[in-house]
Amino acid sequence: MRSTFQVKTQQKVEIINITPQVQEAIDVSGVAEGACTIYVPHTTASILIQENADPNVHTDLLNALDRLVPKDLPYLHQTVNKNAPSHIKAALIGPAKTVFIGEGKLLLGTYQFIYLCEFDGSRDRQVWLRIVSDEPR
Ligand code: ZN
Image (cartoon, rainbow, N blue to C red; front, side):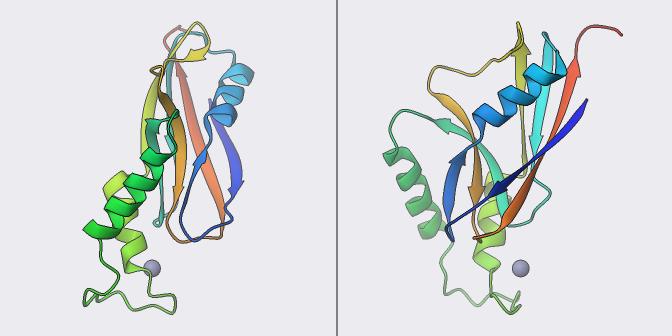
């Protein structure tokens, strides 16, 4: 089953918890055992699975990405918004993750949530889900 939802980002760079929307789509699908792939059809946003307890982890991650991907390198991608660093950060985190489903629930670790990473906001982002059941139809 395919499902889509929208996320309206507010900041240039932010990490947004989308775990509730993903679980809701799984609830609607009725899939009890299987897997869910979470994907963004964007080149400056990503899907991340990370710590949900200490928000400093998100700040540390964003600060480390700023060090890894400096704003002032001689980038060749010189569009109006000069967003080469946004593309590179999105490439490093990646556009998709897959999570197993058990007894109708996302099988995440205690400290794991699913996040959309915005690297070039604010924008309207789409999240595409593919929910696959282990059970034959
Ligand atoms: Zn660009």
